[in-house]
Length: 264
Image (cartoon, rainbow, N blue to C red; front, side, top):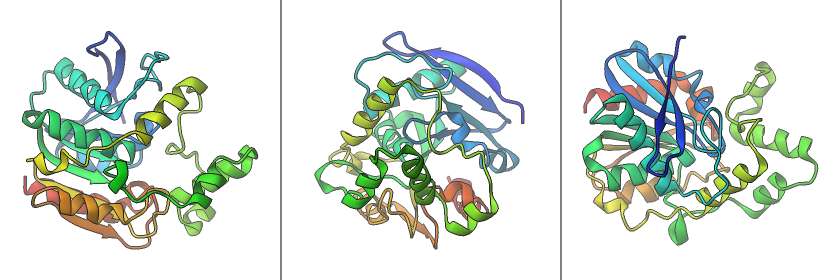
């Protein structure tokens, strides 16, 4: 797959690397925390085959984007997405955000409603006091000083045992391996401080909420919270899927998202 690469300049002067492929209706694909555009490697072709121009970006702090050592926020990340759309000359796009990308997409739809034609929120959370947090045992395992064990546990949160047994990787959903430690911390804080609860009812874009039924990394219980909070939102749960449902279960999730986008 050939990606056309470019760089946009954010409001604060930060260079944001982006990638575009295909032709047709613009579809922005937003990756998870501490990840680059490669998060979407296995899934984006199906959207292009269905007539979408897919647009991804490397979050500030990752990949080919600048990596300033200063506070990041999911709301500021949304303005980075707008900078990319502006650089590409795209006035309005469909937006599909997963995990932290779903948090960013919430702000994008709330703060820039004229830029979002339809919204898909995958394996994400509203943040703040109303969100359902992952279990303490999950947090402890991820913070283990045994990094080999912690990294393996992260993979198990992303994928089912059957998938891991039959797919040897590489896995592009477990973080940018070249990301500086300070930037990882900035991403962690940005995601952890996300709280869009009060603005969710203002989102006017048609919205689909997608989540795996077996997601404990970002608990599935967050899906109905978001669905009930955004006017007329729909929800689809992917049976048996964990956090990386969009990759492992792409043959199920992809058509679900495409059917929704076809309506809007």
